[in-house]
Length: 308
Image 1 (cartoon, rainbow, N blue to C red):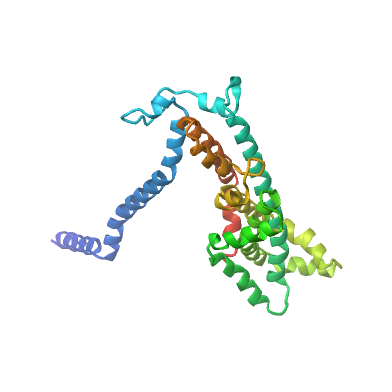
Image 2: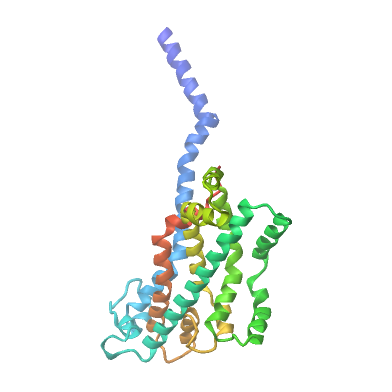
């Protein structure tokens, strides 16, 4: 009889726990997990499907790309568009030269902007993080406040400045505009990273007789390389993705980056859709590969200072 009563109390206790907050939390975990998985799948499809569709279209023939119903896999699978883009086998239709030149322009403009941005940002961020001077907070907030301005609001003033300096359609104009836009974000990233570096390292260097500049170059920068790498990668990727500013500031193939050339090819009715998609895939592959390979440095640099 006692065993029957004990079993009854146990059953009631289990029922109460299952009906309580703990039981509801346990029963709700699978639903939340399924919700997260569904959200991730939707985000991935939304982000990656256009890229896949461009790749799918570039790897088939023009009749295959125009087929109804649409083929979700290349049918037939051919590489003619990429051979034409790179001018392999005598093909090219002028596209190989245009794309190659525009890729070089993108590398030059994004790379130069990246280098100048990082060099200036290191000095500025270190000054804001370590030095004491009048109006430091006001200047720092003013620099960061420029991130709130719409980039396109400065398009006409920047164009007029470059035109007055006779810099339109030059690498220098594009690079200067890029630096002006990327510098506040780079300063913010490096400022947060410098704040994570123990001051004892610099104090030890000062005790050994090192000057502030030597301390920055030989002590701080080597330790801050992950943050510097993150700022450099982000600046390069942002420069590669620019379209409107180089469209306005460059007028011919000598200085136009790949984003402008691909958009120009889209307006040339003689360029097949498959060839256009191949150009777009190649233009997107460079930043995509960089982001995947260097993703660890980007995350480490951006999240620096968020956890103390």
